[in-house]
Length: 62
Image 1: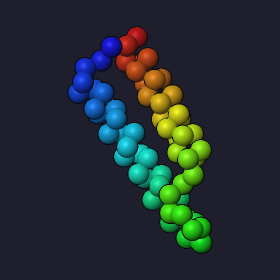
Image 2 (image 1 turned 180 degrees about the vertical axis):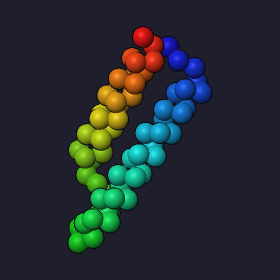
Image 3 (image 1 turned 30 degrees about the vertical axis):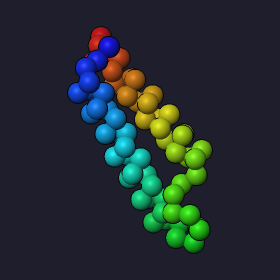
């Protein structure tokens, strides 16, 4: 288990990358009505982030 600081840091990293993804998609698809990516896209990205973070944490803890 990790400290609150770690949790907050990881959380902010996920938020930052989610924001980055959102701005990239809205820029590339100006024709689309909604600027935000679909829920499935967000979930897929969050899942990917989580897996990458889990892998990093495993490396750190070993």
